[in-house]
Amino acid sequence: MNTQTRRRCLRGLAAGVIVLACGGAAAAQSGDPADGVWKLNVAKSTYSPGPAPKQVTVTIETAGPGRKVAVDGMAGDGSPLKWGYAGNFDGKDIRLTGANPDADVVMLKRLSATTTRSTFKKAGARTIVNGISISADGKTMTVASTGVNAKGQSVKNTQVYDRQ
Image 1 (cartoon, rainbow, N blue to C red):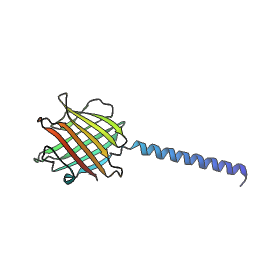
Image 2 (image 1 turned 30 degrees about the vertical axis):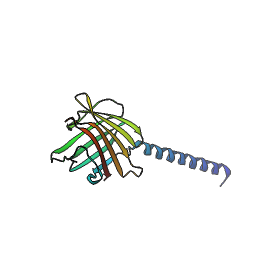
Image 3 (image 1 turned 180 degrees about the vertical axis):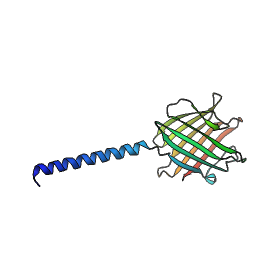
Image 4 (image 1 turned 90 degrees about the vertical axis):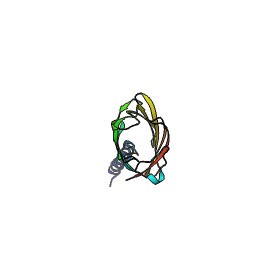
């Protein structure tokens, strides 16, 4: 192989490595670490006030610059839980769909790559604030909830979800 051919091959190889590296970084940045299906681990979670839900599944998907969330489960009293939202991390009110007794809108804020805050409101008044974090291994989502629910009760919950 002559010198000119060798240089062309090396340039092509270097260009290919750069394209792969940039493409891999872009792919890694495009996915939200919270994306996926999460099941509440009731045994590892704490609820004040109770009772804890019997079961909850949360599905999170990237939706443009924000996320889409669907909550499906059964409350501690046996009533169904089914609500969700889709919106951006821009601090603007996002209307909830379904029936959430403590909120009709939510505002989203991204704090870091693995941490977000969801601030819920009912009839314009702040009710619950959720601090949501994804573990380093991506297998656990922890939701720390504080505030006052629609019944006027102080809320301090720690919900632990396992990735499905």
